[in-house]
Figure 1: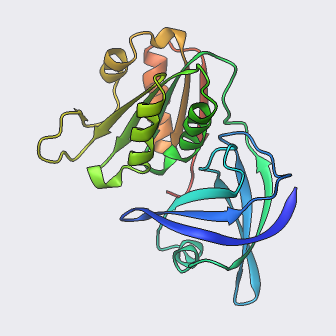
Figure 2 (figure 1 turned 135 degrees about the vertical axis):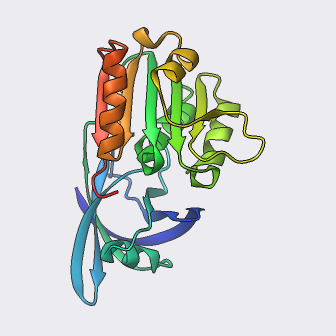
Figure 3 (figure 1 turned 30 degrees about the horizontal axis):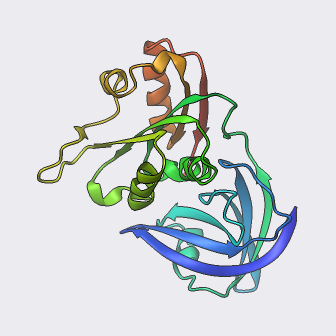
Length: 229
């Protein structure tokens, strides 16, 4: 479906990542992990891009996407949004959604966390018994998007385990260092052969994760590549 709405709220998530919330119609149904097309007006001209929905379907009052702010023209337009601006939403689209499988594992990096946030929050809100392990890689601690959201999910959902991996380590970091590896997967996901794996993020990162999963002879895999990052 397609409908007109307005920017409801802009949230600074990290030093270079923002979430943008828009009013949501009751009729706009979507599955956690899907995306939509957003149209904004720039000097009277309409510009359209697609974005993964980072809010769960359980949030009826708004729909949200989350983006790393770059130097692109559309990104700079988003960075200037304050609230109240006209927007048009069309969708939903996409097949990066939760399968009817009890055990899952997400492998993600950077802004690729957005559909996973939607899925994990959805499972937590509905108290589903889906067993989830998330391995989330970032360059630095300050780059972790939705860090506090995931901490709250872990507190409220005994079926979610979140493991952070950082390339540049802060003082007193007790987690994993470097990048996601087969050794980390084996250590943190001992039953990996029983799980459905989802991986999303920049294309190079997704390709690297696919190689790891092939090494582990994992058969059940779903991917989503985020071009342009």
